[in-house]
Image (cartoon, rainbow over all chains, first blue to last red; front, side, top):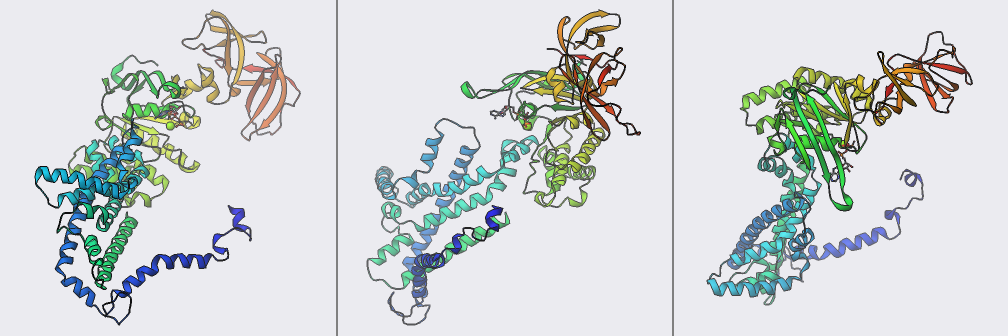
Amino acid sequence: MADAARSPKAFSLKRQPGFSSLAIACFLMLYAPIVVLVLYSFNAGTSIAIWEGFSWRWYEAAWQNEQIKDAATRSLIVAACATTVATTVATLAGLATTRTGKFRGQTAVFAIINQPLMVPEIVTAVALLIFFAIIKVATGYTGLVYLIAAHAAFCIPFAYLPIRARLEGMDLTLEHAAADLYATPWKTFRRVTLPLLWPGILAGAMLAFVISLDDVVITEFVKTAGQDTLPTYMLGQLRRVVTPEINAISTVFLAISVVLVCIFFFLNRKG
Amino acid sequence: MNSSNGGSQAVRIEAVSKVFGEGEGRVVALDNVTVGIRQNEFFTLLGPSGCGKTTLLRLIAGFEHPTGGEILLEGADISALPPYARPVNTVFQSYALFPHMTVAQNIGFGLEMLGKPRAEIDRTVDDMLQLVKMTELKDRHTNQISGGQQQRVALARALAPHPKVLLLDEPLSALDLKLRKEMQIELKRLQNETGITFVFVTHDQEEALTMSDQIAVMNNGKILQVGAPRDIYDHPADRFVAQFIGETNFLTAELASRGKSGTQVKLPSGKSVAAALPADGRTQGLVTVVVRPEHARLTKVKSKAALTGTLENIVYFGTDTHYHLQLEDKTPFIVREQNQPDGQAPYREGDQLGIEIGADAVQVLRD
Ligand SMILES: Nc1ncnc2c1ncn2[C@@H]1O[C@H](COP(=O)(O)OP(=O)(O)OP(=O)(O)O)[C@@H](O)[C@H]1O
Ligand SMILES: [Mg+2]
């Protein structure tokens, strides 16, 4: 290491010809469409491609649109409920897979927990559609719980990953030390494991929240009439006339996720 | 030594075995260990890496359960109790301080878990902070203090609930030499002041000799010898113990008469000397005996000496000099002599010299 640093001809990726241009090209590819999207949300005209001056009109239009408000509220309710359920299940699963001895079928358990990451979303969607149809016929209930259950299910692996990573990185001796100092397993969990696990749980919850907020495919299959979430509403609008209202909603979405990510980083830094 | 008075024993390990895994990967970490630790004793487990010291501590603390045998705490079997129900505290090698709590909160944790009233907790925490001289830093987080200070907090945290037994797993190994020496003295002081039984693990023989009331020397999951530092050093009963602690000379000898003046052994030179026998060794035939280098003296008068040999090598150490000799039967023998102020090396390489052996310096080994 030291030798490489001293040598003037040490290999550095940064100094390769074309590195900066390539990096800039990548960032442009990633962010240019988003920049355009945000820009046109402030368009005074009705086109999403012809700039006619700055205005807030599409934000106002979106704010006054009852359908959008209805869909946004539903999105938030579903995301909040699904996040709570998924994060709780993921925390328990994380504890079970890191705080017990190796057990038979451990790999199978990992596979089952991570199933939504591996099975194509469309397959899960169709499966849920059929499964819930059976239950709907049997019970007659057609409320929001189906959506929440479906979202919770595919959010679990996203919540599970950061929680498990945090649990695995945690020093087990700390929990031994608590037990040694007369803390029962429950007290050890409350006073030592949970406070240290907190950033992981938060990260998991935020990931789950964003994933749920964003979902189209499964929602489209599982929702009953009049149960649009924001993404499915937007998808529906695209089939009709497209105005910068869509851009405005997307920009708000973007702002929310940026804020969430910032909060998360801030919390993590403090922890 | 083998106190039959079970009442005064803080901990009794009775025929305890611990086996990890099964089949190919089977490891016998402890093999039928029996030992008693008396009240208020500074008891040290000494042995090389992997001999089972940590395993024995973890069994006493309750993090592992024995595959066989019993663990008694003040006469009561605690083998089935979980760690949080045992009046035993541990100072972990890595300290394991809670990073999300302050120094004072760390120290108070045990008392809080025991459900003590707030006032009593605060009082004890203050006492403990004073005891380990950390009062000024009580509101710091544990990642804002030095290694030595973390060590003190770990000690205070384990002492605060006033356990019946304090277990310390190589608590000084992460400290530098100077701090280690300071903490050795500090630990002895704390043990005296609190009167708590300490079970201390180390693989450093010097640390064991200077600090302990009793030492148990371990190897391969077995306790080979238990005794006071002096006993262990002067009268090792086992080849491993003799080798592991200090430097020593091994000789083959023949057990001779057991007369009024105790046991005599016949050395390779043909001379007989008095020797101490181990408790459970053999009583006749060929045995191995050990002589510490500082318990032998060189002399130019060969006729009266117990052994004779050729001086091969002289190594000067400042306070003393090591003389490496070869006996007539080619066995090596080291004599250590304190240096005198006149500064003259009294012997030269190649000299034929006699070796006198002090009274009570020959110890017969068990094997
Ligand atoms: N959980 C475990 N599973 C399998 N083997 C183990 C386990 N814990 C310890 N061992 C084995 O038991 C033996 C004794 O280990 P132990 O940790 O007690 O050694 P030690 O004397 O404390 O060594 P050191 O001085 O290196 O800390 C070792 O061979 C070790 O590999
Ligand atoms: Mg160890």
